[in-house]
Length: 202
Image 1 (tube, rainbow, N blue to C red):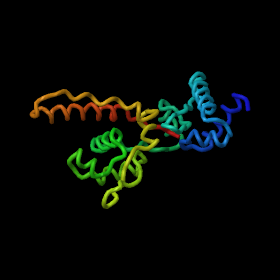
Image 2 (tube, helix red, strand yellow; image 1 turned 90 degrees about the vertical axis):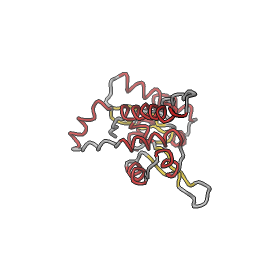
Image 3 (cartoon, rainbow, N blue to C red; image 1 turned 120 degrees about the vertical axis):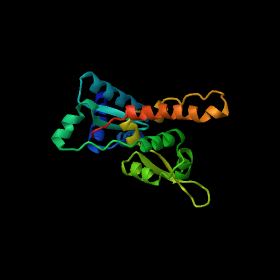
Image 4 (spheres, rainbow, N blue to C red; image 1 turned 180 degrees about the vertical axis):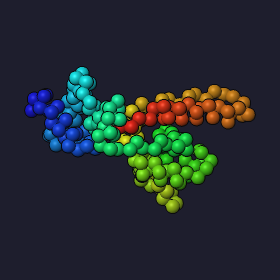
């Protein structure tokens, strides 16, 4: 296969899938090395950007997906008669931040950090596809472990978890000011999630 054919084959696979696809699966289907497929996907992404296509290629960890561009979301909604998703609550953003930076984590860990019951919030985030079960912890009761999903990366315009902003350094301070600093750090992280939330339309 020529480079152009490889790029076209990748585009066809992603278009037909409609969901994020592991690069290893694409490589296996094309009987090519993953590095070759990765290069073809990079060329495909550049080509879509250069010609101002309404479609863009997203990298979500080790997966790739074709999506419409965010700037055309309203027009897509109008044609497909889609309703805009309800915004996430502050509690949901906080839970997402805890999981994103510490995953995989148990619900008990999240509740220990936040100091309140998080059962409903975790369930809602799982229903929205932003969190998912990642197995069970090898402890009595075998509690479930939770982590973020490719949809989480897509909604916050991240290619991988490595793109998350670094947590601010916590300086040596008096014990009396610990809570104040923790609140400041929490606000910075919540701001990132609230300001970075984007809706991606397949």
